[in-house]
Amino acid sequence: MNLDFSIILAQWPRFLWGLGYDLYFAFAGFAIGCVVGFISYLGSASRSKLTRAISYVYVQIVRGLPMYLLLLWVYFGLATKFGLALTGPQSIIIAIAIMSSAFASEIFRTGYNSIDVGQIEAGKALGLSDYRINRTILFPQVVRVVIPPLLSVFVICFKASTYAAVIAVPELIYAAQDISLNQYRPFEAYISVAVLLIATMLVLSLLVKMIETRLKESQGA
Image 1 (cartoon, rainbow, N blue to C red):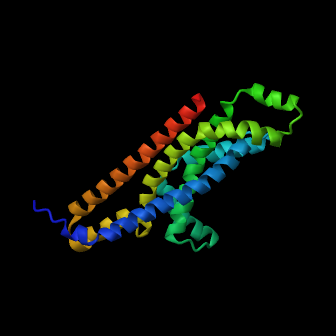
Image 2: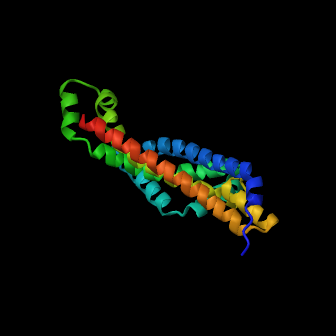
Image 3: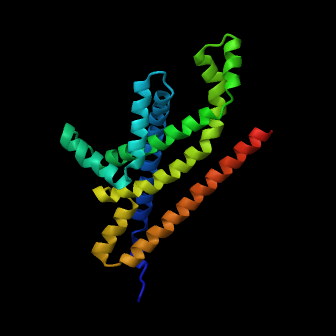
């Protein structure tokens, strides 16, 4: 089997742009997902049984949906049902946001549950409002707890961003598909994509480990 990577080298800027798209989709969807996930957590911690039930059902349904199906539902289902003209990039960002929000909700719940209840009682004894207790006592501690698992969710979001190729968004996998079909070099195209994705995943994983180590060191100081 003769391998010819000259075509891949000629198309290298296209691969890098595709990788940039994937990182952008992952970051945008993850950021929105964290906000929605925090709102979902607030719902799960609500005194209202109905609100808690809605939050629980939302998280369980989203966690059970494959990303592929979720993306198709957003891109085709929402457009058909509500007449929304969603573009490919908008659809993949929304799908990633929905997916990551379920994970983020559980992470926030675990983070808040890890805080000693005695700190809340101490804050109330000092006459602090619930808002002040959350802002000055709970939230700073929760942030340190939730950052490492949230960063791991971002890594998952990055992998999920490659599904954008399904709806013809010009990201990394789509670029490889196009070269494979038009240049008849599938092996070279996909092995190049694999190298880029693995390298990016390793860098992201190392960053997550570094941040986790820094947080542990700061907690121990």
